[in-house]
Length: 298
Image 1 (cartoon, rainbow, N blue to C red):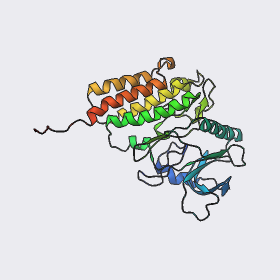
Image 2 (image 1 turned 180 degrees about the horizontal axis):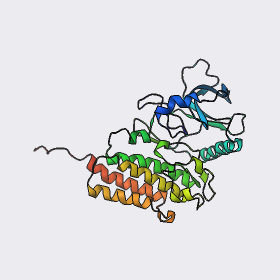
Image 3 (image 1 turned 45 degrees about the vertical axis):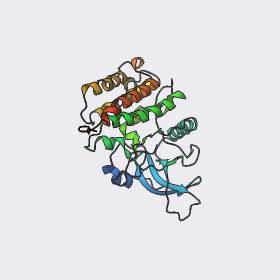
Image 4 (image 1 turned 180 degrees about the vertical axis):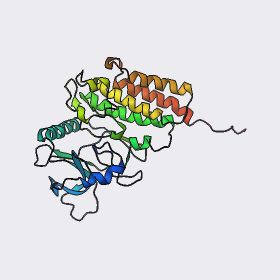
């Protein structure tokens, strides 16, 4: 849940959660950082701000007893005083609930949190990564295999959420972090909600990736909403991949089409998507690492 704002222009970056802006906005965002964040929250020392908006701030963090330590291995999210207190408490409580139920290597971990403190907060590991949004818009095309690999990792994280009866609710390239080793991390759990409950987070959802039923408010929360958003993410990847043969692309396009079905009941389950992505990965892998040039004669 640490997400998207980079502090240095490199693959190893400190990132913050809950922003849909690019790193060019970083300085102006920090100029609006709240000045009333305590220097100590629970057992944590609050360091410099690395992201701030009208809604929340992200600060570097370290254990409170780590006096004079140069290490800031955590990120602490606090909320603007102008935010509705009940919404903040609900937000933090939902993140606590899902974090208690789901542990997955491709899903951000909440180390500590308090919904009832005078200043509610969330503590997460400090990530060294860039957002998928930045990778998609850096002007460098990637092999199709990379697109499938990244999408499959996030699909597996989503599967773990759906299995315990929740949805993520806001899948976008801004909320997926990519490490230099290719590890993908799904972050920003601020819109998670239990399946079959009515959403009240529409103002926080990225409309470019939200499913039709989310935008119209026609249905209660269901896993198909995440499937649609992930399909939009994979579709974006297809526009940023190197050319491939129709034989390779057609099954991928078929999967995307099914994930983007207008009728949510016609979309595949997340478990089916994971299986299909794995199969596509293996099929494309053979074309990606095939022999180059002519073979030597013995």
